[in-house]
Length: 99
Image 1 (cartoon, rainbow, N blue to C red):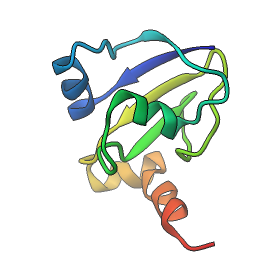
Image 2: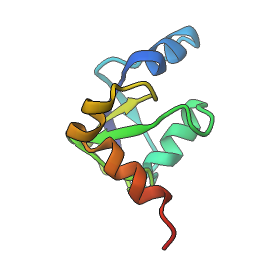
Image 3: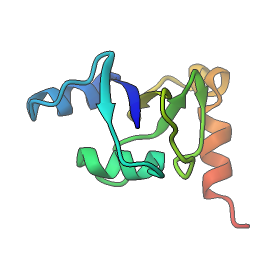
C-alpha cells in the first residue's frame, strides 16, 4: 500500500538528519501496518511522536493504515491551546486511560 507522509517540527529534523524524506512524500508500506508500526519503522523512540494526523484528524496510534491514507507526525511541543483545538489532549487522555 502507499501512503502520503509528512513530519512536522523536530520529527522532520530527526528524519532529515537520517536522509529520510518527510515532506509530502509517498511511502510504500506493508498491508496491515498500524500508525505505531510506521512510527517504529522510522526509528522513533517512545514519546518522540505525540500525535498523528490521519487524513486530517488526530487518530490513535493503534489505527490500521490503508492505501491512499495521508499521515502526518507531530512531536511533543505543540502549545497548550492548540493541543485542545486539534484534539491532541483528548487523544492522549484516551490512549493513557485504563480500560
